[in-house]
Image 1: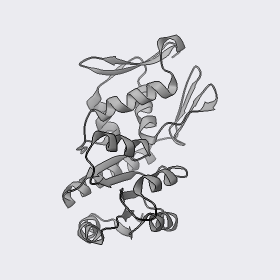
Image 2: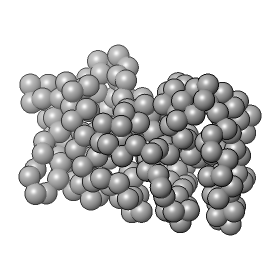
Image 3: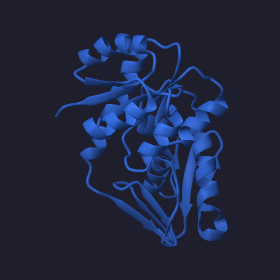
Length: 230
């Protein structure tokens, strides 16, 4: 299987630096220097992973990410010079799976890519699965969530967090377990990103005890997806 990686960055020097390191791991590198070219190359080569710079001409990385998410769940790692939490959350809300803040080492980038590729490979080896509770349906193969038959707009990572929690109803799942299963053991980011994702899931799904489903925070231990209709 050919493992294509699309690197979209208007700084050609960054692409030149990363290319030999990524090729050494057995990946084929596809490059793009602006947002339009990134979208064209995505359609042409169907890459398994995308490294996407935020600041690019024509379309910026956020816009490219949103457009790709309309049709694909291909893992996207944002490359950004911005380190503020609001910018990181903005990127994750656009549909990104992870982010790397400049300046970075090629070794860090390769570690992130390998972690993401391990996760998507493991998922493809699993059987198709759908979880249903009263009023709530989660389809992990199609990355869709429905509440009372109506689709709810959750990001890819929000769906993955909900999937892991709902796989273990009424059981405590630690933050470290969520980080390892969803972001990978090589995750270098802020562990509080789990808290941010769960807060958004609660709001979007109107989770509370009155609906017989809720994500409870178990202080010092983790989170528990509580349902009364298991």
